[in-house]
Length: 164
Image (cartoon, rainbow, N blue to C red; front, side, top):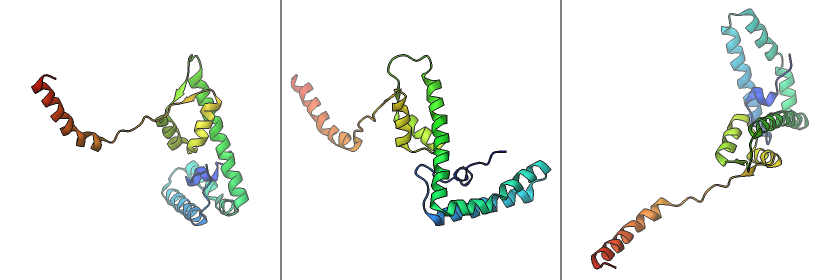
């Protein structure tokens, strides 16, 4: 069985990689505590064995995530894996489409929340595949519009009165 990425197991950001060692250590201890709790309550032998195998990664995980070079290599490996998955998804979405393909900020944000990739990475992958980024529309401050509304209504009422 292939070992899962430590950033994925710990649910830590990998693009850019988490560099705060206290957060990393806290996440590792929390991960271990949760697995031990699941192991204590597991009744199935195969599930217990899988959890024990995962717990065996604890010392290697702690050493790898402590050292900056191995931590960055781990993050880069996960970033490459997720980028490949996103490129495949973009290819599937592009298949049979004609015209200008556009991606919205909402879709980019959704992909960011699901895959953990940085917004710039996602946008770069879409533009590399020939998609156009749809810019956010300008937001109008409603407070200013509604504050001016009585003045506008007063002008409209005068013009109706005088038949302007």
